[in-house]
Amino acid sequence: MERYLVVSGSKKGEYFFSQLLEEAGFHNIDTIDSAEGAKRLINNFHYDIIIINSPLADEPGEKLAGTLCKTTASGVLLVVKAEKVSEIEDRVADEGVFVLAKPLNKPMFLAAIRFVRASWMRISALRAKEENLKKQLEDIKLIERAKYCLIQYLGMTEPQAHRHIEKQAMDMRRSKRQIAEDILKTYEM
Image 1 (spheres, rainbow, N blue to C red):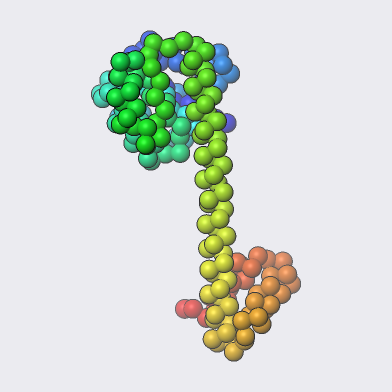
Image 2 (image 1 turned 30 degrees about the horizontal axis):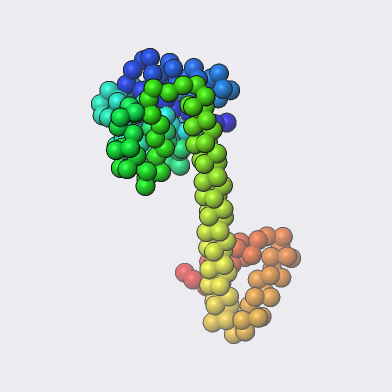
């Protein structure tokens, strides 16, 4: 289930953004008024999208937005006064922060949220794919080390070692990684 965080220095802003999210069908919304409070919440919960209504109780908000983009997988939307948009965009755009000008209306805000959400979903899918590829690469490295042990200690050729690991995996109904781990436990102490 998606989770949203609204960080706003004013109660009016907290209510406004929470209400718009609820009306648009987005639920599971937390609110907080400061950067420090937001950091504490983020240590305990994962948020898919974070909306920062600048200024906050303890900072303008752009520093928090940049930090969150660097340290979390959340989509971050920073809402600032219209006269500051281009200045702030120049500073935070490279970090992945989406900047929106105040005052804003409901259709504009909802379009921005949908854009941030779509971007977040795409980035999340790419991160999952990257993690899967990393795991596959780790598996290959482990299996290659196990083959090297079979070659070194049992005098097998590379094709024989490869076949041995595959056959053990099939016969024992285990993954090649598990077989490779067993081989490494045996020969690499």
